[in-house]
Image (tube, rainbow, N blue to C red):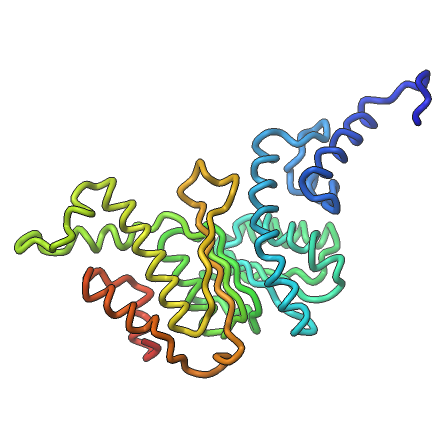
Length: 294
């Protein structure tokens, strides 16, 4: 028990408060990394916005834990690829919480904006994350090498589809997607002839409904595509993200019996039926057809 007569400096008090806060979020998180990522105030506190962001990321990581454990049990030095990584917050936090303590495996961050890549690369060197690397290319031009888990957090519109195509090209063991701004299908729906009217046209008659229905339709198609490619797919709502439409996690894990072999999943026929019913074929499907995958 602390001496009641002993004064505690403001910096020590802030450190104790931060430790207590992190205990409620993720006990092993490094405060030094949070400072380096500018997620702490000058006084060493988590502000409301940073706390919200961390809670979201931690919930996302917890949902990935079974997949991470499975992959690290099967692969000696697995690679996690973060697509459209931005400032690479997710990559840094994953490394600190998972790869660092485990002592093996690497994280590859794909980002097309050179200034973000340069800053993240410098930070990785500063904090000693030597198994963290960066690919400064657009998703379609990027080659991260062997890929065990591909993650795309808020890759906008068809960038999520580029991420899926990359994951399929690399035969990734698992894919985790939190899609964002699914606008492509909304545009395609507006191009369906008004006369004779499609029997379901009232589902996307108004612009708001077109965006919402287009978003749902897009993610349903993505899930079916991944099933058709031999993955077991789950779709989960991310808690703490309810204020945002970007709160849907599509998690796909390659079925062992399908590894490297064509699939006979009924999802192919379901996908074909759905596209016959609503003729709005997105880029992902068009690209896979062009590659002879569908």
